[in-house]
Amino acid sequence: MAPRKKLQGLVAATVTPMTPDGQINLSVIRQYVDYLVSKQNVKNIFVNGTTGEGLALSIQERKQLAEEWVRQGKDKLDHVIIHVGALSLPGSQELARHAAAIGASGIAVIAPFFFKPTSKDELLAFLREVASEAPAIPFYYYHIPPLTGVKIRVEELLDGIKEQIPTFQGVKFSDTDLLDLAQCINKNGREEFVFLYGVDEQLLSALAIGANGAVGSTYNYLGQKTNMMLQAFAQHDLALARKYQFLTGEFLNFVIKLGFGVAQTKAVMTFVSGIPMGPPRLPLVKASEEFIAKAKAKLDSIVWPTN
Image (tube, rainbow, N blue to C red; front, side, top):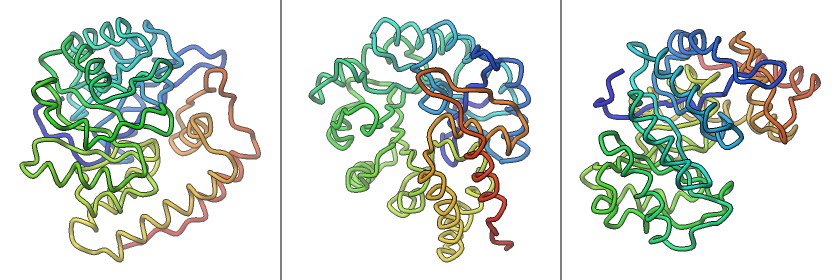
């Protein structure tokens, strides 16, 4: 891995493979890394986040997964970002220390969401205490208000953040509030920070206002197609970029209507990659056979641009 390389482009939010009886399955992670690099042209990963069921895993499981992803990603991946957010500060700090010790490229932290911070200062205090446990590696804030209920605007959070968190490098921005994102990017004139968008079906909109890349679950199985969209956008071929975005949106719109979450993402990844991802952990339940059949038929039916 080359952690000093700027984090940009696509970052796959990895699924956590599990055995049929619900234990983490480390044995397929090497195959998973090779699949992302060779089939999807994705060389950055975000481990133990929402897609990875991080908050449903034990501290020990999260450590084991982080170790295996770093080990298997060595010399193959550019960035292995470990999400270390937890509901307890000591738990998050322990995971941060561990991620730094094993050679992760960076850490990310979600806002605690049972006892919630209600102001910028409260949120910053929590983030600062976690980041200080890994002072040698980049720190990213994982902003996902639809799940956390913490709606402190990132624009507000950024004011003076480097003084509080010297390792702060950017944001995984998983919200549809493009005004907030645009204000962040506008204030980031010196391009000090990176902004990675986390709502896959709206990525082109975020690119248009200056996002550096994206973190998402669909880049596990639509990474190669989304890379083509990024390439078209970079070449100012907006018509082609739109085609890719519309087709990704067509698939996601279809599965969202069927009911689409982490469990269904695991099922899609299994049939696209051929790597068994297993069931999710309760309270999530595995995708139905009906969902799998319909999602596979829909994905197979999409005609992607050939140019």
